[in-house]
Length: 116
Image 1 (cartoon, rainbow, N blue to C red):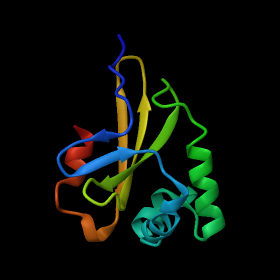
Image 2 (image 1 turned 90 degrees about the horizontal axis):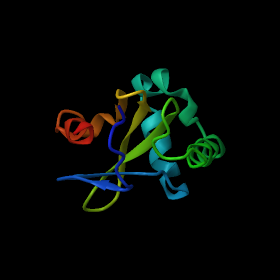
Image 3 (image 1 turned 180 degrees about the horizontal axis):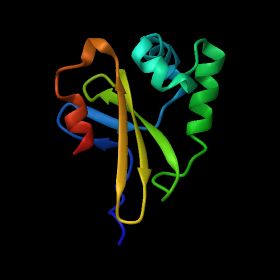
């Protein structure tokens, strides 16, 4: 059994799930500066060079490959501002999802939208 594979970007009510771009570096660093995010996702980096390397590595992955972990940016739909990330791993008819959201955007239902 396989899951349907959507095309990127994925747009829902208030957010867009998309690949990271190098323009996201400042917001990746802002996200990574939160200790709860950094502890779970230190691969985001702690300086511009590391954040850019993370983005370039993520963009090498093929979208939604079974067994492969990859991250997508969670961005506000109206201005494309990066507010978080979601990590996806597809299995045989299953999917695992993780997320990190900047503290300023928590509690607003964005992750619930991303998971739908």
